[in-house]
Length: 233
Image 1 (cartoon, helix red, strand yellow):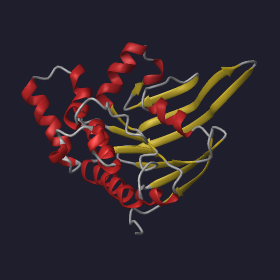
Image 2: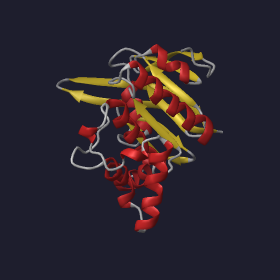
Image 3: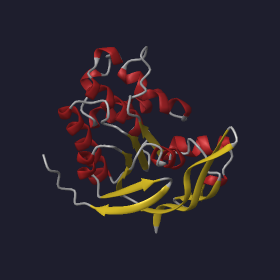
């Protein structure tokens, strides 16, 4: 049984007299533990699909069932509660709060959960250690390199132990060595911890870390590539 099931998934926006349809009747099944890369030209619907799976947005038509829950039918409050437990989001530009330390940035998703201070601290340090940046816990984003900032962002995404990690161009603002390190980290989270990862990318090199690559165009899947997980350096 698939962890994520999209049936005729459609997202529409009204712009003036026109209807913009970044997703148009998309069908997609994603098994638990998959590492899926999404590619396609700008405007093909990649980030729209990512935002629907992350429960940041809701479809106009169709259904989106994740782990047996039809999240397309949830109210805004229930959707937010579901998202906080099940999804971690990694952004291209990190989206760290500049006035908070790495520790405090990772702590943010936990503040809405009923945890005591000791348990919260343990989870934060576990996440920071997992991404190899516990020694920078008291540093502010301006004191970190781009690769370190993205590691903090990944720690923030995994601190609640979500089933799904969605990543929107996670290496798009990084140099080659930092990008390689971040992709190795995501691959480890997938292979060692069993996290299901859906990643949007424009870089064919990053797809080498994924188990499958889907290509989108005009809101629909146009083909699929099956890749092994042996990365060419």
